[in-house]
Image (cartoon, rainbow, N blue to C red; front, side):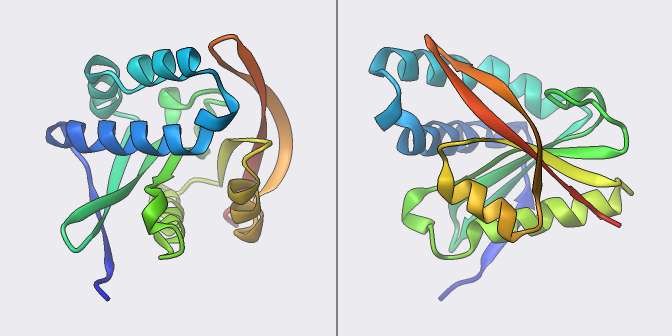
Length: 173
């Protein structure tokens, strides 16, 4: 089996990021949200304009996981002002770890998490943090397995639906 390779993404990779983002978000959340809410969220959140803005933000980093020249997932990290909520200069946010469903079980998520951990160390951050939907039990268990603990929660609005995200963090020292 070929190994998973992780490479930093750039604006030329926008189509890949859009496809992975739309596919994985739909796979994960479509069964619990209305078709109308999903369609609107996917169109807005993964639009070319929005993703280009994120890719060009100096405080955001994107990495794509490749398996035998096929893109299988991606990681989005935020520091400084790019962080969605805390905006703590001593922290790095894992905003997204998205892995295509057919590649679950190949440790792609773990490899992307390890890239986040390595990046946080390289940037001399004190901790990693993220927000994960409370009903995404697979993701919650993954982060707990990797040493994250819950510290707060917030409401994530997807169309007309209000959902609770668990905010989790992991100290690096």
